Length: 395
Picture 1: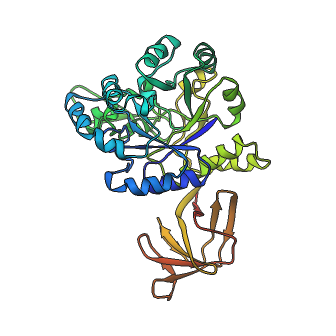
Picture 2: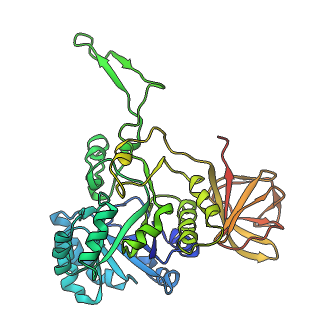
């Protein structure tokens, strides 16, 4: 099966490939359902081609199109053609028709999960419209997917196997738009379902005076669904005929993308030490894990009782080696000399280090380095470029 990873930015794309992805998906700013993911712009096309190499890359144009968006898509068709996409991910049927008319069969179309396709009859219609792959609606069970693949073996089937789930059906939620004015269906979800909510009592003649109805700490996460994690069931997905397994998370960190991709790569390859990499899934930011709708609806229908679980903080990444054992850093958070950090790599678990030395661009030692500073790190640990620096959180 193809391992498909998220890449909200060019940097995340590099790490997705470096940590084991066969393919990655990125958004185009105007048409992506993750408009705050960073996405890729036209000035990065040449860099995109270089990073992609011989890997697969899919472009997400999966927002729902209003009339004004159709005109914009027509204007952008020639520009889209310049991108090194192997396929386009589309939800809107009108957009699909425009893309098919322009590209013909030269550009495969993948039906976005947002179209919530759940049965073979619907898939036949999409096949006849020119789609070659269906990204199944997340409500589809493994049994249904097996039957669909048996009925339509010529169609590629892709499913999400890891990441955030939505409490609303197929992500068609109005809560974000109602509370913040940011529409989830137009790529700008504020993730209001993850917030903590409190119910209060107001007496008619005392308007504005609220009496809390409290349970435990006074807040509930009733709207927040559990996360999906199918790493223990990849053989069953393979047996069902699934062609591509997809990781959610274009808005998540580089550390998340790399760690989760690496764990699924090791599991798919049946590496001897893959259970150790599996444990890393519990060290990245996540909510309680579940198997979604694959086996039954009961587990996912219960909201999570916990907020995000975070064991580590992303400190930065190791860039090029500028001298023996001296590396340029790309810092994301503060780094203090003498603190204990860990390095992880595509094939390396946590390598602990507290004896590193930091230097500024003038070669002077520094005790504290901050985000955006040009900093170099010297260490005797076996690390390389594309390694990630993390630090255990206090909790």
